[in-house]
Length: 449
Image 1: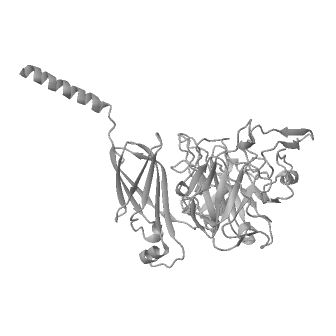
Image 2: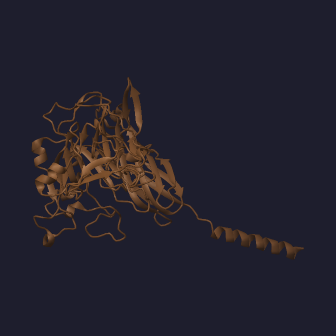
Image 3: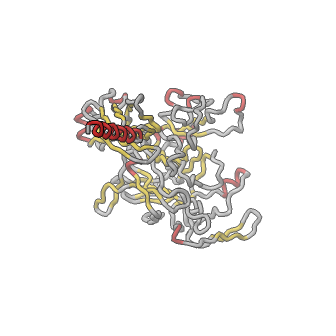
């Protein structure tokens, strides 16, 4: 009987060891969060830390203690980390002694953080950025089905007045921001550790110490025209800037570069949108005619929509075209004419003196202090992320669609409040928190000029 008992015990131990071999142990990881140099690196108490496992998409959330620390147990792997801390005006004044009129939000993020038995701590310093009165409300970049919809012709952005006052849109700049479209397995000497360009190495860089934190680098800049008070946007109202302001639900009749008639059919109008009443559009045909280039035949001029001024163009597209995969970053900014003229331009940091000449593409180095709002858009495929193009002070998060390119999905800000019929949207300078995905874009024309 004793021999039988011992044999059974040995068998149980063997089975237990076999199960442990297939069990993935979690590891403990500590985060230390502070409020950045402007606040003397004070600990960020009750900051929310969000983690997303890059491999399986699982998410976790923890909150820091009074020392700015938080510990979590997770499966070893690679994680994207996002941190946010929000103060009311009264809380921030009591905390810092600085008088403010609006809430103050600190953000921070790190991509591809390795968490393992040997890498057990991560430190993040937060930054606070300007919360703008004008914000991106909705961005429709994925386009619609290539056979049954309008492909990329129906793309648009929507800008919202998130303040309590009327704002004139005259002179507002809109820009697409340049950056790496993916993270290479080999980090080059002209890249930052996260895989993004290290702009401090660019030829003609005049502020290398702050090149990657105090600027964004535009590859395309458009401007709403006007003398100063021509285009008022009331509180709680929005305007759409269309790539092409036509009804994309209907067949598009146009002519090609040879003057031959062309019709773009739309098999399923429910997949796309009617932008024929959009107040603004980006019409490029005149720009290309003046520069000796060729536009695209689907770029139709709607006489009832106001054409944006095309001021700076390094992007090779022949219309206002967003990356349908989501590898984008967009900003709106303000600057007077003198300040705009003084904005520096630099080539990619991969360009050296040997291959730099007057035909080399350059990118406009827009100071972050001019930026009113920015949105970091991410590739839908989590296995193929792009490194962030915007500093944390502009956008500490990112947003992607669910179904990807040509799916007809859009991204839209979450509603914060609805007062007296005016809708105000959430803006924490963190797109991971501020935006959500719509199955179809919403087109409502609330403002005309």
